[in-house]
Amino acid sequence: MPIGTDINHAAELLRKGEVVAIPTETVYGLAANAYNEAAVLKIFQAKQRPAFDPLIVHVHSLEQVQEVVSFQRLRRADTYRPTPAETTVTKRTLRGDDDTRKEAEALMAKFWPGPLTLVLPKSDRVPDLVTSGLDTVAVRMPAHPMALELLRSLDFPLAAPSANPFGYVSPTTAQHVADQLGEKIPYILDGGPCTVGVESTIIGWESDAEQWVLYRPGGTPVSEIEAVIGTVGQAKKSVLPASPGTLESHYAPRKPVFIGDVKSLLKEHTGQRTAVIAFTEKHEAWRTEVLSPKGNIAEAARRLFAALRSLDASEANVILAEIFPQEGLGAAINDRLRRASAKRS
Ligand code: TXA
Ligand code: MG
Picture 1 (cartoon, rainbow, N blue to C red):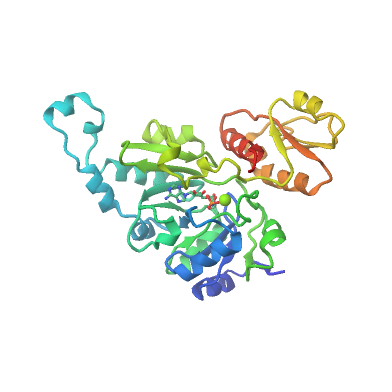
Picture 2: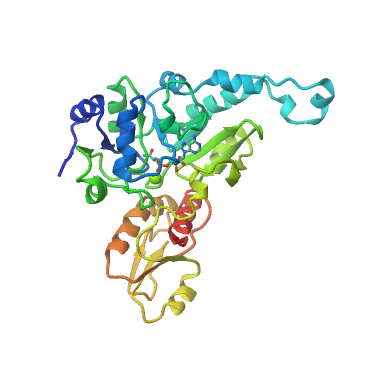
C-alpha cells in the first residue's frame, strides 16, 4: 500500500506530474501541480470527477495568491464610478476600488492557514481545466504542517479536491484514501487523522451582485467570517452550475440516508437494521455512532465522515441521522448529512 510520511518523495512525484494524496486539516486532498494540465487531468480521472466541477488551488503564502488570483481584474470590476445621484442612495457606491481586495486580504490574515476557501478572479496562469472554464479560482492555505512543508518545497501551487471517488464521503485518514483510490495513485502522504474533519467553507466575491456569497458551509463558521466582512449572502444556484450547492446528492454513502427526528425515523424503519448518527446519546437502534458524548460540535464534525464510512461498510440496511445544532460547525454537519440523504437519480 503506497502510504508513507516522506514529503520529499511526494514532492518528487508532484514535480514529475503525478498525483499524490495529501493531508490537510479538513479532509485529505488529491493533489497535482496546478499549472500542469496533464497532471490535473489525472485528478479528474482518478476521482471520476466530471470536468464541470472546478478544483481548489492550495497555496503556502500570500505571495503565491498573487500568482493565481488577479486582483487587477477585481479592481476593474470595482472601478465602477457612480453618478453623484447614485452615491447618495446605494450602498455599493460607498465601496472604493480596493475594498474587495482588502476584505479578501483581511480574511486571509484572519483565517489562513485554515479551513476557508475564497473564490476570486483568476489569473492567466491557472489552466481552465482547474477552474472548469470559470473566470474565478478557488484558493486556500491549508493548516496542516505537512501540507505546508510540501507546498513550500514546490515552486507551484497544488490543485486538490477531496481524495474520494466523485460523490462519495470525503476521506479523513490516509487509510480512507487507500481503501478507495489506493490502486489508482502512486503515493498517499500520511499526516494522521484530519483535525477539522469537514471540508473548508467556500465563499466568493460576486461582482454582479457586489457581495460575498456562501457556496459551501464548512470548517470556518460563517458567523466568524461575517464578523470580519459583514453579511455574506447566499449563492444563487443558477449563477454557478458547478457549485457544490447544486449537486444535491454529494458526500453520500451507498446506503440510504435519512435525516430528521430519529425517533420517528426509527418507527418508519421498524424491522430493518438501522444505524444511527447521533450527537450525544445512543438510540434504540441496531447500531448508533455517537459523535460527541460531551456535546462538542467540533468533535462531532471531526468524527462525522469516519462514522458515515463505517456505517456504510456495516451490515446496516439504512442510516438515520439526527439534525445537529446549527451553531459553529453544526451548519456544515447538517449540510453534509442533508446532501448524503438526497435521492440519487
Ligand atoms: O477542505 C477542502 O476544501 C478540501 C481540501 C482538500 O482542501 N477540498 C475540497 O475540494 O473539498 P472539493 O473539490 O471536494 O470541493 C471543492 C468545491 C467543489 O465542489 C467546487 O464546486 C467548488 O469547490 N469550487 C471550486 N472552484 C470554484 C469556483 N471557481 N467557483 C465556485 N465554486 C468552486
Ligand atoms: Mg469533494
